[in-house]
Structures are given as structure tokens and as C-alpha cells.
Amino acid sequence: MGSNTCHSFSPDMFSSLLVIDGDDEAPENNTAPGNPKFVEFRFEKVFPVYAMGVLKPDPDPVLAEFSSGSDLDDPIWDAVREEAKLEAEKEPILSSFLYASILSHDCLERALAFVLANRLQSPTLLATQLMDIFCNIIMDDRDIQRSIRLDVQAFKDRDPSCLSYCSALLYLKGYHSLQAYRVAHALWNQGRRVLALALQSRISEVFGVDIHPAAKIGEGILLDHATGVVIGETAVIGNRVSLMQGVTLGGTGKETGDRHPKVGQGALIGASANILGNIKIGEGAMIAAGSLVLKEVPPRSMVAGIPAKVIGYYEDEQDPSLTMKHDASKEFFEHVAVQR
Image 1 (cartoon, one colour):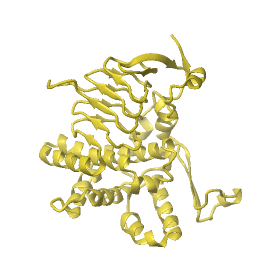
Image 2 (cartoon, rainbow, N blue to C red):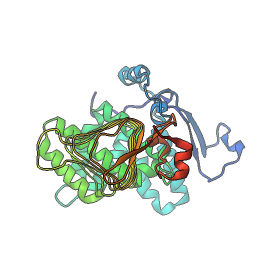
Image 3 (tube, one colour):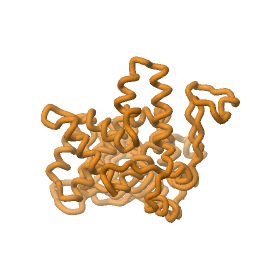
Image 4 (cartoon, one colour):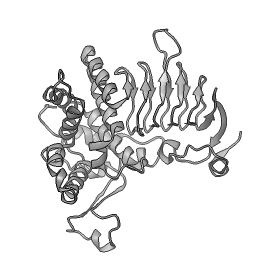
């Protein structure tokens, strides 16, 4: 795959009905074809995995789309552009910013590279240099291209304050820090570790998020608010996990080697939770806010306290990372949890 090629994605790779509306409440007749302020895309194959909580998806259709190399549509990018156009009409003062950040680019990858480069630039690490680094990595890595779309869908679906795909791309530092980490991780794996660590340092300085470039993070990830998130070198995070602000996935001392937590897919980790040591957090588990987790957490369980203890189990078929219900209140338990 050449670094100068933007790749697009078939609408049938995605699962939900995506609607772009210029108004808060649109009448039903605005959905008619040809209305420029109301565009519909039907997503069929990928996003049920990340937006609807399917535990064991069949990856074959996705792999077929990604390996075909055909010139296909990209619903996420189409949505971002339509939203940017509407925002430029509503706020003319932002029209130059929206043009430079989104509308002047031919694909999501280049727009994201531009946004990240301008957020992370410094007097000694210029935006033009960063733009080259981000473009070279993202444009040649199909896994990252897939992840940036699944991540932005996660932000749109799970964060009620995320107004649009466009706003996630432009303004949410949780999304920015996660995608910048993905580039640093690719650099680390290429053996360019000094540059990866320099990028990690800059991400931490600008966004207040410290993710070691060697950590392994899946896709469909939400870093909600993100401030104060720390993810250690040997940490592993599965797909469609949601982490709130202040979460630490850390070690327990000065030991080297595999020393950080392993978080299963679909887990939800509440604000300021500290998970320490090489322990497993089971799939679909929920860690209550402020908990200190020092032992392994069973799948689909809820833990809380200092030190954290199991306080119940989920009956709900959806992963807690998707429902984002983590208040651990009595009412919550009565409707969602069961004792074992």
C-alpha cells in the first residue's frame, strides 16, 4: 500500500443508521432523498461488534473488505465532511478552521494527521514534521485505519457529550491521545523507539494522558474525558473497552518484565480506578470509580472498594462498556446485577 493513497470503506462494513442533521429536531420529511442537510448511511457488518456488544463476531466480511483494495465509500469520512460543512454555515468564524482541518483533505487519515500535528507541535517538533510522521504511519497501516473509525464510532455512541463525528475528530482529547498513541505504538514496533518515546512525552504534556508506546490497545476504545489516564508498558486492553478519567493501569514496584494489567474486551473502568500488577480483568467486567484493584477480576463481575471486592455480576447481555452504567447503586443492582 502506497503512502500517497487514501483508502475508503464500504458502507456495508458498518452497522447502524448514521444520520447527519443540521437541526436538533428534524421533521420526518427531512429524511427524503436529496435533502442536503439530512444524509443517511446504513452500516451493516462491523459496528454490531463494537456498538451492539456481539461477543464473537465473524471477521471474514471485514477482512475481505480490507484486503480487496477496491475503491469504496467511507461513511465515517462522508459524515465528518457533511457535519463540517453544516458547522461552517452555522459558525462562519470557524469556516477557515474547518476548511483547513477537514474540508481541504481527501480522506479521514490525512485530516486526522493534520489535527494531531497541530495539537502536538512544539518549537522543536514542528507541525510539518509531525504531519509527515503521522501520514506515513497511518496511510501505510490498515489496522490503524480501521481503529480510527471504530474508535470515533465508540466516542459517538457512548459519550453523550460527543455531538458528532466531526466534534470527536476536532475537539476530544481522549480521541486525539488514543490515535497519537497508535502512531507511537507503530513507531515502537518499527524499532524507532526514541521517536516513539518523544511522541509519548508530548502526548502526556499536551493531553494529560500517559500511554506507553509498547502497550497493546484494541479497537472500539473510549477514553472518556481522558485526563490523568496512565497505561503502563506491558498493559493489554481488549476491544470495545471504556475507560473514564484518572484510570491507572500500573505496576506494583520496580520489577521489570510483564508487570501491568490485562483488561478483557467489553470492560468498563470507572473514574480514578487504580489497577495494579500483572492481573487479569475479565471480559465484560465493571470496575467502580475509585477502586483499588490488586487481584484478578472474574468476567462480567462488578468490583468496588479499597481493596476492590466482587459485589455482583451482570445479567445484561450488553457489555458494560457499551451501556456505560457504572454507578453501582442499589437501584442499578436491582435491575442489572445478580448475586452469586
